[in-house]
Image 1 (cartoon, rainbow, N blue to C red):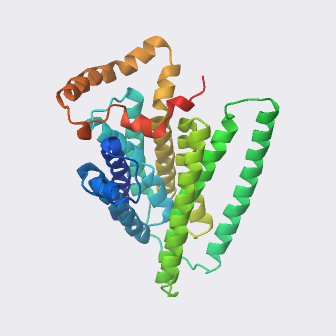
Image 2: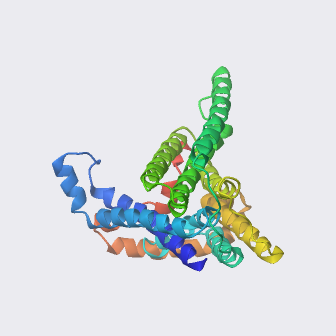
Length: 342
């Protein structure tokens, strides 16, 4: 079980760090287009190319992990990507982190260890070829209900002539994107199960195509949520929904099961809980710290203020715009200050 967990951590590290490096490279690049001059500029930018390759390799390694372990194990562990991204941003990009960030990283780390201890090897359960259409049907019904709820919220907001999105709308966008991210892993796993059970190999590219479509649609919903609401709420709901979807779909649709031993079952459930709590803390740490009383806020930010002064001195010595990000990269990726409601 430790091999697929390590592969999942490597994959999610490649995905998240790769996106940061791509973002770092685009600081001095024009908007991406299919013009030859623009494509050449991207291809010659070292940070962007390395980030792009890490992102692609991370996706391939994630498929490898899914072929070796239950999706109910891989999907929760993949939620630790935010913790890995936080550590990378702190030590490589000199980004500031507060005490709650470190608590979230610690909880996600202990949760991953607990999943490794509590998880167990499982035999491939019999899987019907009709499970894939059934899963798509269930998700489609769920999306219809969520969109009806979203429409009702928008109509009520328009009746009251409110400009900002309601928190329910932000939650719905986050849930929809997270469900699609979780389903992408589930559908990829179904493709590998079909192969091991002797079905046609043509089902694998079909499942992977559906998986890629789910991921792409999930990014569309997440971006729509960022545009119309607070990204911190959308990101939190998406991360939690992705983990919960992977676990529930793995257990109820793919026939994966919890460990039979009570201790192992408790450790596995505890690992899932720690990862979810750790991810929520990492996404919401800045907002949670701002809500604390001033003495506690000052205490939690004491270490980050020292790091800020130190990173400021480092950045003042580095005048190359291709190697410096002027804003907090991690929180810039998951928050949108212009969209925050006060």
